[in-house]
Length: 124
Image (cartoon, rainbow, N blue to C red; front, side):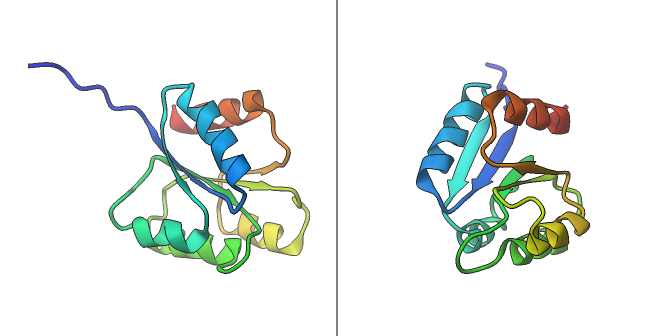
């Protein structure tokens, strides 16, 4: 019987498709499994069946606010690590999200190296 190798899984949630594509490419090049979502509500709809090892979440998008998404995630799984990506790291909503216990708040734009470094630290 062949042994199966399980790679860490990462959910990426952002309303910008070009960012989703870029992050997905960077992370899959590290042999991590990824699943992308164009909105927080799309991710939450799937979260019952899909429990990633890490979530990368945009803090600000239309519809369900980032803080609401984080609160919903934390109500279902308090220990799942969440990395927030935002162009507005000092915005009130970002600071509110940070108080909810996310692992990191990283400023956009972000380099592949910095993202990989932070995700590796979480997954190890």
